[in-house]
Structures are given as C-alpha cells and as structure tokens.
Length: 159
Figure 1 (cartoon, rainbow, N blue to C red):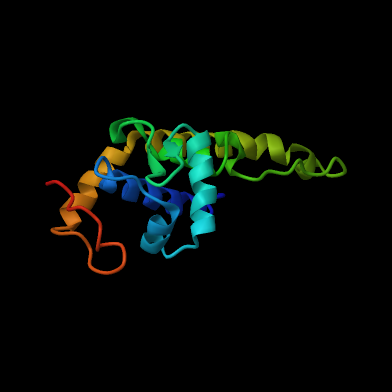
Figure 2: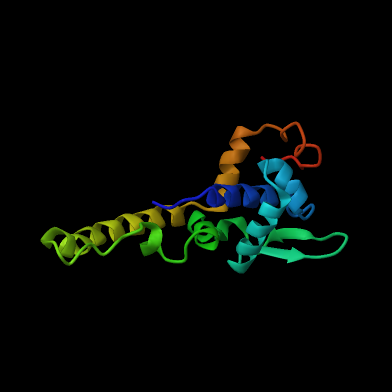
C-alpha cells in the first residue's frame, strides 16, 4: 500500500489551518514550526491541497492559506487524493506477471479484484472521516493551546 509521509503531513497542515481559522491565515513558516518540516515542503503541500480544492491562498502582507471548504466538507479521502493518488485502484502497485508461466500469466487476474476491493474499502472508510471530526478529537485532547513554537500565537480551540 502506498501512503507516504505527505498524507499525514497534509492532515496536520489542514488541522493547523483549521485551528487558526477564521482569526488568521496560516503561513508556510508557521505551519512548518508545528509540523517540524521545512517551509518549502509545506508550501509544496499547500499547492497540492489548493489544486485539490481544499485550501485557498492569498499573497501579500496578510497572505497565507485558509480552508477552501468548511471542515465538515473535507474528508481524509479528499486529502489523500490531493497529495497522493488520484485513483484508488493505483494504491497497490501491481505487475502483469509472465506469459511464459501459467501462474504468472493469470496472477494479475487473480489478485487484482482483491486489491481493488481493499482499495475501495480504504476509500470508503477515509471518506467517512471529516476534518471536523478530527478537530473534535483534537479538542478532546487539548485543554489549552500547546506550549512552544506553534502555541505562542495559536488561538485556543473552542470547546
């Protein structure tokens, strides 16, 4: 299964942006502090998330990013598609096998339906989890903003 660190990093970015919203826009530097990543890595994720319709960016002195949709309308599957793969079927790398062997000649046809079924189950499960529900879970874990670099300017999450 193909899930790189881009996916959890993108979820972290969107959660952070949602926590700041609507009080202020998030910058790549601020999100990079929260994620422990490089601002360039965060900007690259911002671009993918914006192309996926999940973030809206603005330039200038008060520039930054904000959610393009309400948290209830953003699912884990939306995030995954934006930063990883466009098609569920491509989650599993498959090969065609070898025509010179009866097992190799038929291997793809035998395994493919099961991999497609697993990918569809993953998609369905991820489509049920919204950014809003993750914010609720985060709220349960946090009584106050975290201390440290990202917590200095981070507004308290509303209970």
